[in-house]
Amino acid sequence: MSAIPMVEMVKVTKRFPGVVANDHVSLTIEAGQIHGLLGENGAGKSTLMSILTGLYRPDEGEIYIKGKQVEMLSPKDAVVRGIGMVHQHFKLVKSFTVAENIILGLQDMGLLYDKTGVQAQVEQFCTQYGMCIDPSAKVWQLTVGEQQRVEIIKALFRGAEILILDEPTAVLTPQEAKELYKTLRLMANQGKAIIVISHKLSEVLEGTDMISVLRNGKPAGSTKTELASEQELTRWMVGRNVTAHNDRAEKLPGSVVLELDKVSCLNNRGQMALHEASLCIRAGEILGIAGVAGNGQTELAEIVAGLRQIESGTKVVSGVDHTGSSSKDMIRAGVSYVPEDRLGTGLVPGLNAVDNYILKSYAKNGWFINWQRALQETREAIASFDIKMADVFNPVKMMSGGNLQKLLLAREIHADPRLLVVVYPMRGLDVGAMAAVRELLLAQREAGKAILLISEELDELFALSDTIAVLHRGEIMGVVHPHTATVEEVGMMMAGKRMLEQHAV
Image (tube, rainbow, N blue to C red; front, side, top):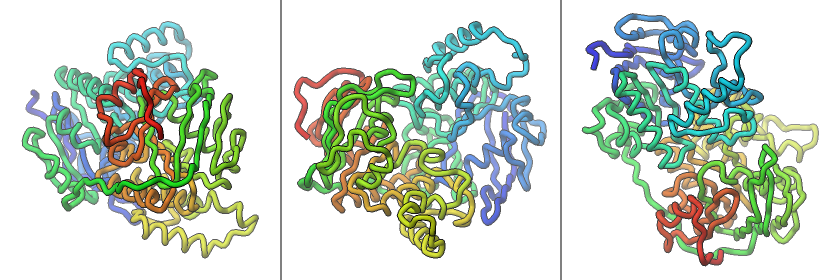
């Protein structure tokens, strides 16, 4: 290992209006190591890494790369110095193909290039790192999980010596996450420096060499991974002990709220995404959907929310046929929808919190909006859901992922729905935000709401769900009860093994 650190950030400070994102933060990254960077949403992790990659300029502090002091004036400066970053919110051109996104910005490509040759090269590279994806597919046709893989492949493809990954496994299965860490370990063994921003403590404890923690923009602690514990890291992150527990009390569900009967639909590529899926959710019940990303979960949620056309089958909500209903019809029918894409589908990045909060309710008031009441309701929601933001009138794109999720949940719950469709609600959240979202969902269940919960985390599904349906290639492999099924059984169904007998829901 080199005696000179690959990266050294010394007393870095970055201020935004009303917020000190980084307050004299020092961080040392060694070559040949995987360094985990932890902290609650809004702790300053992504801001610190954005400074290192030239997206932001620090107000104070110094940056050294391989012992030489540098000034990152732009992302181009970072690329030249061998720094690459995979952001939590994607930086892809959706109208371009996978291959075009991966080679975008490479100086040696020129205006004319061998398209077939590049695609073959990308495909070979994808196979090498175990993250296969069609290089000719348009990015807009891909699921969020597949888009995240493109970002990872793009960074690896460029051979950065310093690789930063912001929540890289948030959309990967446990098996895929292990394969990714094997790849990262291989790169570290070749002398590269890897920085992983993550909220998955068990994953960081298993896959890193060093761990540093930020809290409220300040350093909270740093240690060798072999000396760390989950309890200690959690305490550093949130400043208190957080106990994970399951408050889901057993109760008899009420009347049927949603019934899907042999529903089929197509994906964005015109291929069959959901095939004759039948599901039933009752009032006061959480139905969890398990499955590897890209197996029809997104399309299922969009069908229920009225955002995707049903090719065959029927959809009934509270006894009324809504097979051909639009998204506006579903809102009127009492269906609230929390999509996986918080910034874009769920919220409008350039609008402030008030505008986003009233997006679904303004139609009720016609052209007139009572802005004083809208502001009051938004502030009440911010206080009630413990949403942290510098100013209610700032664009929501300035908020952290956890606070974006809570704002989105606050808006959808405020609509007092009969059915709440929630897609990957814990993705990219810290332990404190995850606990808050769990409490919100369980409170809605206790209030008699029907909840369709889609998640890639089996532990989360087993803790929250009353029943779990498993999707594989758009087909339901089985429906199980968490207290009688095992994680191994669900995992086998996720891989394509159908249950011989499906439990009645």
